[in-house]
Length: 396
Ligand SMILES: *Cc1c(COP(=O)(O)O)cnc(C)c1O
Image 1 (cartoon, rainbow, N blue to C red):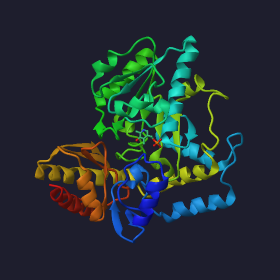
Image 2: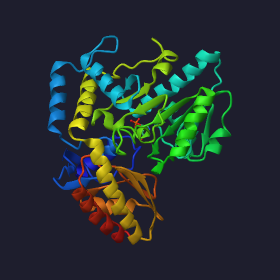
Image 3: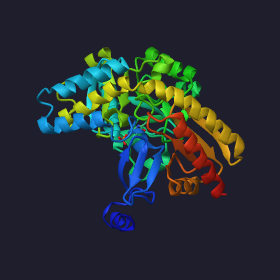
C-alpha cells in the first residue's frame, strides 16, 4: 500500500489531502484495501454507492450493456437512456431531463436554463441568481459561482457574475436580495458539503412563494440529499415543495459517473432548445442502463424505506453519542445523511476510525459526516458507533 501511495503522490495533481488507504474492492457495506484489510463503509464514495458495493444484478446489467454498445452520441436515440429518462422523471415527478456526466455539469445546465427562461421574457442579459451561504454546488465556474464558501472561489475570480448570497432559513435575507432581475433561487434541500445544514419547511415554502410571485425559477440541488438518502426519493418530496428545476447525480448512476437536471414542462417549453446545450457523453447507453437498473433496484430493495428506518435509528444513536462526549457541540441531518459537529478538527478521529476498520468522512474541518450505503442495517450502525466512540476517546 505504501508504494501505491508514494506513486500516487508523485503523479496525481495534489488537489486532495487523501486518507492513507488504497481501496481495492468492495462488497455490500464493506470495503477492502490492497493489503486485504476489511472496513465498514460510512461514506459510500460520498453518497454514491447507495446500493452498496458489488451488487450482482447491477454489475450484470453493466456487463451486458458493455457487450452491446457503450456510446452512440446524442444525435441518435438509444433505448437504455429512454428507459432511464422515464425512470428518473417518474421518481421525481419532473417532466423532462437532460443527462450530464457529473453533478457540477447538472448545475451548469440548471443555471443556463434559468438564464434562458428569463432571457426569453425580456431579451436582457442582466439577470440575477440568489444562492445560499454554506452551499456547495460543484467546482466548474458556474457551479462555483453559486457555491457559498468564499475560500473555494477566491483564487478563481471573476465568477459568472450577478450572484447574490442569502442565509438559509432566513427568508428576510432572501427577500432583501430579490429584484426585478432575479431569475432563479438555487438551494440544496439539505446542505451537504457545507456542513449538513437542513432547510426548514417554512423557508422552503417561502422560497417557492417568492419564486412564484416573481416568475423566478426555484432550483433545488438534490445531488447529495436526493436518491433516497433522506428517506424520500428526493428530499423536497418530504415537504411537498416542488422545484421548477432539479439537479441529481451521485447515487443516480450507482458508481457510474452521471448527473442530470430536470424541469417542469412549463420551463422546458420556455428555455433551452436545440443548439442551446449538449454533451458528447451525457446519457449514453452505458449510463442509461446503469440509471435504469438503479431505479429498479431501489424498488426491489425498498431503499427509501430502509434509509428512513435505519436513518431514524442512526439519529437516536448519534444523539446518545453526543450526550456522552462534551467535545460534540451539535448533531444535524436526517435519514442517512447526518453530521456531528466537534469543538476541534476531526481528522484525528477519522484516522483512528480508519485504523480500526471504519471509513468516515468530514464536511469542513470540524464535522464528521455520515453517508453510508442506503442498504445498511441497524447492526452496522451499532458496529460503527462502537468504533466511533473509541476513535473519539483516542483522539483526546
Ligand atoms: C457533490 C455535489 C455537487 C457536485 O457534483 P460533482 O459530481 O462532484 O460535480 C453539487 N451539488 C451538491 C449538493 C453536491 O453534493
